[in-house]
Length: 307
Image (cartoon, rainbow, N blue to C red; front, side, top):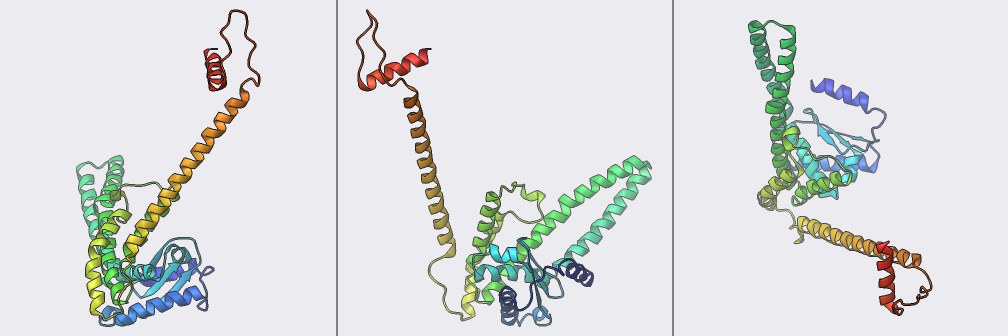
């Protein structure tokens, strides 16, 4: 299955693969090599010939096939805020291959298909009608999708986040950058106007849940990194810096919105003043004496409103 998938992807991306001499390709290749070297104690890693393929495309995605073929889009390279986030992403994808998630999903699919076949056979035996069989097949496909496939996929993604964070720690990365990446992705989706769907409808955990899980795992990953005798990390936590930056941007946006609203109100007031008569009306006999200044303007406005 992996060989077939590789053949399909190579054919699909044959015209958009970046040359190995490209600096972006060399950067990803270097990080994959560092990840592989730092975790040689894992047999599944040391026996895999890792190969990098960088696809020139805006898609924010990366994946690793079980045979060590790494695919990453330039859209992902542009989405990460630094090398530490990129190491975490690569660790996450390598974790999928390391744990054997593709085989787990294939196994689940076979079991679910067998159970579904038994259920449909029972329905057909009880009521052998084509319309009922079609309806039963549609219902069972939806039940399988939302009760088995998607929850299982979310579980595998959460597991890959956990293992990927540990791999990044063993590769000397600042694991505190992991949660920040998913916070960035949440803001990016909001700016693009992406619809927010409930997590139970998705194959991946929500960005917020991934951030919360990674925040819980960061202390353990930092301890693992410290045991590897790497140089210490900066005291400035990327998570704190991110929150401060977002707060500053929001405050500035509110100030700009307030200024724009005040300018709009001032323009509206000016237009009203220009529409008023430039000279005061001549009083008629028996009328009240003319008011001056703001009182005159107020009286004129009241007159116009009464009409």
